[in-house]
Length: 312
Length: 161
Image (cartoon, rainbow over all chains, first blue to last red):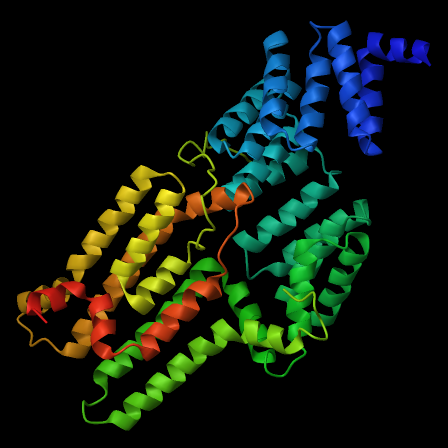
């Protein structure tokens, strides 16, 4: 047993595999101990610090993970892994600009590293730079088309960038599922895409499959909630309205909302001052519509809470 | 490889995420609130939320939006006068609300990345409904004079009642 541990501590490749295996089976405390031992045995080798950074980030100790990544970079300034691990920790700490700088440094060292481009795409999507994130994701896919989670990311970004063309997103997420059928996230994104396309039954199946794989998947819970609420006649028009609005994208949605409001205000301005009945009717219709769009969700949820306590 | 031109760093102006002292309003709520209860109370709320994020510069910017919002109800009057038109109260009110919504959009732009950062650090968010419902109720239930004071306090101040 000790011989095995000694050989792991003297061979960086074996050490990395051992840490990876321990993390995969949820033994992060043992993985951390192994990393500390490796650092003690090989203080000038960056692998121990990199492994420690990865473990600490998994344990949500992001500041310590950052310090470990920086220790690895100090030992080996051209370590693309070091810069990427630093970027991961910085992103978790919410230091987005520094994280971007670190990813760009990793890409200077290896411009064809699909994983780093993919990480960059993910970071840009945090910052609401969806067009640029999509370009980055597509670049990463051109370098490595076999990363399933990247196809899922592309599908999600396509929904933001081309909200009307949901079928392109469907193709992307189905590619992801061909590569990894066990991804709960891919199933929930498929559900979202199908919901946008008003294929409600297929969307429900996709959300249920996502929840079978990961019962806590927040997107699947939200999507399934919408579909369950949509079975109530009171909420059905709201579901339709929501689907129609989601296909318009953010600008289109703002256009519709403020267009309706401007229409209402203009109509009020042109109604002759004495015609109180017309004014009241306009107000009732407009505010009734607003109240319905705002309150249909909470009201339906309250009505269905007894049968579906998990509704969001 | 697709045609790809690196646009350079894109997140240099993205503020570091900071966790607020209490749950934040969704940024889009500022647009709705500006429409429903006027820009001055909305900007006052934004100042409080900006301070809860320990962002003095942001608080100053939202305060500035509030001050601009305080005087904008006069703009439609001046615009009507400059065009030599007889001001219609409904159109003046519409113009005032339009400016209020535009300033609400400015608050949205100012607050959005900070609220996003707060959420990124798993900070809680106030449901949009909790912000809109009281504003909606205020719009419908408050006496006209009080509602008008919220939407255009400067006009009430200048008229002296």
